[in-house]
Image (cartoon, rainbow, N blue to C red; front, side, top):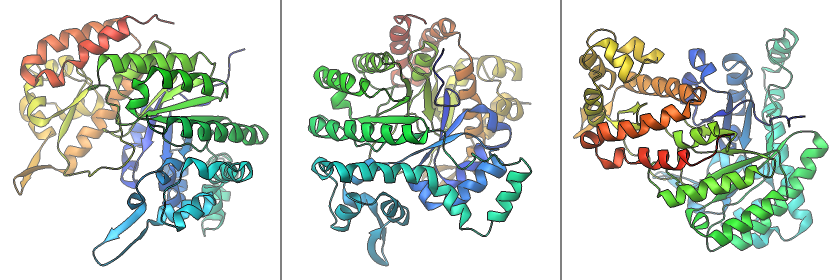
Length: 451
């Protein structure tokens, strides 16, 4: 008998901020299978998320990333800063700490970072794992029960509009901490013990458990560390492995590092557990179609890679996700690429050679070059080009429809040929940095054996 899948489907989307909601509902609701939401977001707006799930997302499956790694890093990342007052813990972080308890609460109170030795006591560690799991299972439901809307939700349940399991995640994620080249041996011990404790708790509750493996690229570079990681994590046999490699751009990293990544995914999959890349591009989607991954997650137009610690967002720029390159291009490069592909010859040519998604069908309808210019319209502010709100709407909707097609189109052999052809066709127009990933991806994927 085939093992029941822990996730609703292979296409997972990261719920980032409240403003993301409009791109996760309506005609975009069916473009993805499941949501991944960060613990801080849930802690900050549990009631709002409950409303989103039931009234807009129609009980879409989800799970919560507990983000326990945030307590490893520079304490300043946990603080809310303002010129008018002294820095203090962000409200969402404070709420998480109340749920998670010790050793996090005790260490953070001292203004310190969490360390591997803080988890040596077995009882403290088990209680911590229980608290992290309790947060994932209870935070939304408890917030609903304490709200003035509780009778309304009970009414919706009686009418069958809201399922009884709407406020329960599809799985729980064990506490986890990042492993880098220097601290690998210490943190892997903590991660393994947390995973074992959490699996025991989840088994008693009858809910699937995921183990999140978070590493820096230095670990992936070290065959000894990778071998140790595989052998130790495979013993746990969770229903799901969630993988996050720090700032791992599948477009930019070397072919050797991509090979190491594929080997690690393959070895984890051999344990019998499902494997999901938490931040992946079309390269990971091709691994999905080759049977090496069971799921790939991304954000809305962004989130195909992510660093462990936050970086400045800067001023947004208008970009277009070019399906032929599976890459977001700056406005100027996007125009050059579309022209080189023959997309400005006619509306029909744009839809044939560039994109025929729902959003592009709507936006490119009269004069393709003018329509595309309007599609990515910007305004000049202090020497910077800032996209209009409708530009963001065009870009994100187009991105979501494009990603849906990538996940559903399993003809990888055809895709490999298109990658190589596109590189040759566009390299001189948009540069090697925007095209050479095509050959690198095609070389690796073509060498894999199809399931």
